[in-house]
Length: 348
Length: 136
Image 1 (cartoon, one colour):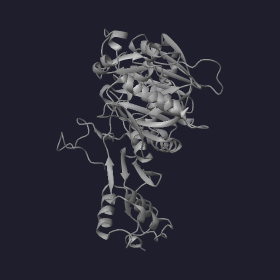
Image 2 (cartoon, one colour; image 1 turned 30 degrees about the horizontal axis):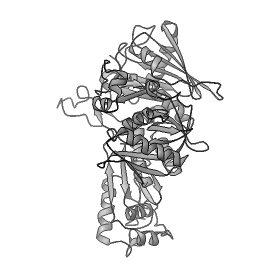
Image 3 (cartoon, chains in turn cyan, brown; image 1 turned 90 degrees about the vertical axis):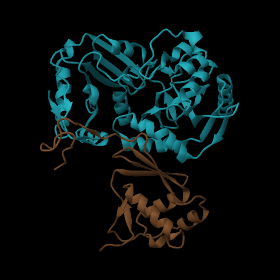
Image 4 (cartoon, chains in turn brown, cyan; image 1 turned 180 degrees about the vertical axis):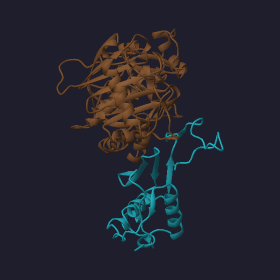
């Protein structure tokens, strides 16, 4: 089994990418996905990832300008000349050191040690490879937002950012909902959708700061734990027959509960940080930008490989552009949605 | 020449931003965040730009300042510097006078990186697992 060290990492990345490109004819499936300003062409094989690619994205509609093209090969040994994925062979692995070493060579990458799972990307040529031991040897979170690392690298290079936040909106204007897991972010987004509000996503949305803060949809996947799923009435509405995901949560798709087609963009006018309150009703109070930044940035940066400093600067700029609020969530989803709808109506 | 009590940002991996006068620092090398109180933000911004500790005498409690700087050094945010001290920013006395919170820095490391060690192959040969090979 080959071993990769920090010194050999860029050469290994180039070797894998070249092997995938040389094997292009052996990938039985090609999918093209239209995203905001980006056309993603994925070459892969049948299986769970191919199914997730069919459902996990919210595709951009209509004519777009300045569209870049990204090719990603998703494969494993047995497809053309794709090699066995290598082990990591250095004593120490640091996320930052790994990312820096690749960035010096114009490359980007991610390595998940437990599975010898690699995502390697040539940013200059917009070609990437997801190399796995076998068809299903991917981290359990991958199907919910497939290929997100490649999208992250491509968009970051253009000054945009995959942002770990929920969204809700009304008449084209909306708010970002930031915070760690368990704070009530997903439940709030779902409650809003069920009450007629819009959203461009719950987990990862594309944000740019050109001429104001705008959020665009990328992924359609929504998640709820069984308790929230029942509390929000989703068990009755969607059924609960499907398997739970790796976090023990139900997964479903935004278009299954959205009141109307997903908007192509939301003009964001507020950054909100939810927490589960103790009162009977929800309330919205101003909060410091420092605290909002601490709610927004860490998970968004930690969950995306590389681009740390640019992410820190981006989220700082974003936070400075928006008024920041803490939303204390009451127990009733309809009441939460009503509070948010009132807030959006005032903000619009 | 070494100027005692002058510090500098410890490395290029330490990046920081200010939000309405309140600082947030990120150590890029390990993903740890640091949040400062209002007085801590003002002192951080002064020290990280090369103002000497002596220049802050009389504006903050000396013992509290010593302890605060010791924490910043321990966290790897500041390091002693040989550079000549920089002048006190004009707005610093007013910022410290208006501060409502004591000097403080808090660490947020729940999403910081895990350092991964390959336990089988990277060991000192004579010692074997689990002694990790030291970088040469």
